[in-house]
Amino acid sequence: MDEIRDEIKNIEKSAERIKALAGDNHAISKNASIILTFTYLLRFDTPEVGE
Amino acid sequence: MDYWNNYTETLPREKLNKIELSHFKNLFSYAKSHSPLYAEKLKGIEAKEIKTFDDIKKVPFTYKEELRKWQENVDPFPYGGLLGVPIEEVSTFRQTSGTTGRPVYVPETYESWQWRVEAWCHILWMAGFRPRHRVFLPFGYNVYVAFWEAHYAAEKVGCEVIPGGALDTKGRVNKIIELKVNAMTGTPTYILNIAQEAMGMGIDPKSFGIERILGAGEPLPEATRKRIEATYGCKMFDHIGSTETCGFAATCEAQNGLHIIEPFFIVELLDRETLSKEVAVGEQGVIVITPLGRRSFPVIRFNTNDVAIKGPSECECGRTSGKLMEIVGRVDDIRKIRGVLFSPKTVEQLVRSEFPEIVEYEIVLTRQDIMDQLTLRIELDPKVGSGEAGAVAGRLAERHKIKTNLSCKVKVEPVGSLPRYDLKAKRFKDVRGDH
Image 1 (cartoon, chains in turn blue, red):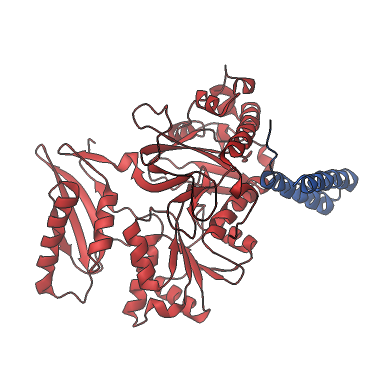
Image 2: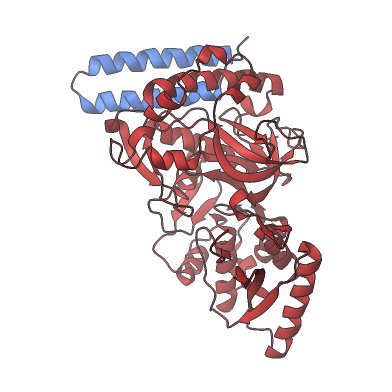
């Protein structure tokens, strides 16, 4: 599960970077936001057990 | 065993509690800083004070009446102080049915909607919906959440979805046959209506080839489930949810209670007298829900007014989530009649299990002078001869007295005279005026 969580973080970083690079390109910006929606769900699917 | 999420669905209880506590604190902080309702309501409580799972009980309940109050004449229209995101982010409008008063308007962002859909994927997967299924949704989709969730989640789990709106019941029967539908969701009442319509057309519902049906919108007593399974030759599953909270519990293949979708929700079952203690397994409690990931419409400790029996966590399916064994009904629907507690669900259980000849019924509670009077209006299968109707009515009155300790009048109504429902059936009418 740790490897999956690391990959989710990588996707989040990439999606944030794409959003920043998108500028006023609505299509790219919106699709990057949608990726972040699904990483939010992936975090719910792979919760870490806090100490 | 086949799960939608084999990691979360088999986590041990103590780990689920830790995860849910963490989600709860996140939601608490978010709601307090983004939702005017909770900025006001949670004044004086800080997230850092919630250290253990039991500390959640320090947070006040949210009631439906509060949701209404915070929407009426409060900006931004129409969501008012319940909105947890900038209104520009809202992508979909939903509303409650308004059965108990003014409807509550529910804003969904793309994220919060997808979160709902993900919760619903658990429900459908538990009910055995798979990519091989062609799912029919016999309902006119509109402002209510019902069936939109099922539609999107069925797509997500890989089913083929057929929207069944804008058709009458006969048209839906024809569509089921035409497209060889093999799975369906619907209110138990309407699923039975479809079967009745088909039989009236000379078609045996078993010939549809439907394998799975998921009930929605109404409680599914055991007797009703068995009747539907026998009528269609399929397996019938159930779930519970609401517009405010999403679908939060569902039955699995074992068909023995409803699994709470954890860790998406915290579901508390609290004693009816003080609403302060979790009830023991086998006892009745009021359902209090916190959906843990919805930021567009944060709802914390929502008191549903529904009563359920707490089930054990163990299940032959291997899931470790908490369970609700049976939905008893709404607190609002339970009445004291001549000193006896009465739940309309008892009548449904009785009619569906012992009276296959009764195709529709309605319970009417009136008052004559100072005496409450219960009347069961029933509609019989047209195949039942007029000579037999009196005997059925007499037997129903007798069995009702034994089951509920209350006598009632039974009135046989003409075929087709009682209302039919495709969403929430309203078969209980209390017209006493002062209850």
